[in-house]
Length: 166
Image (tube, rainbow, N blue to C red; front, side):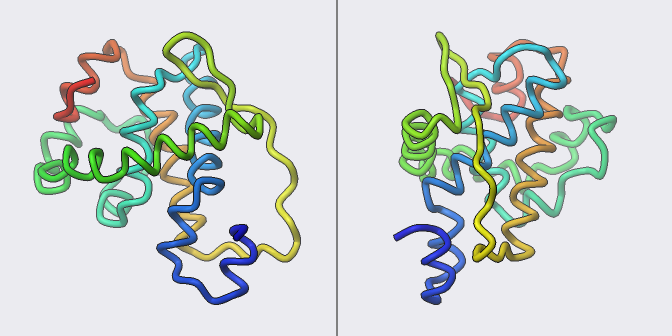
């Protein structure tokens, strides 16, 4: 069932937000923001960090208002949010993999060795009525893409600071 049909049929918002098409959209937005900040493609490992963070409401709400904020200072000051991040990443692994596959199949994402980039997105159907949660997830994914793209640290160091291993 499509995301539009899910919303119209009254399925739960959780089911809608974990839809591979929506998750691919989030990764597209994160990749585009990452690329605009770093002029390079986003490492595919960051996709496994972006989705569990953008779809997790407490994490979304704790993100700073600007990417000028130090990511490392924010990470140190939010240990409770990061405490279960590794578990969330494991729990989201299937959703992230499905989103990447969907995105590649439908050209929402493109890939090169170890990285993904934003692809082309068609216009949103007029019948699709995004919720506040939907919009908040998109804003968080874009923010995380910009923040990760602006990081001076390499991929392994960034992941280690987030408390995860590639």
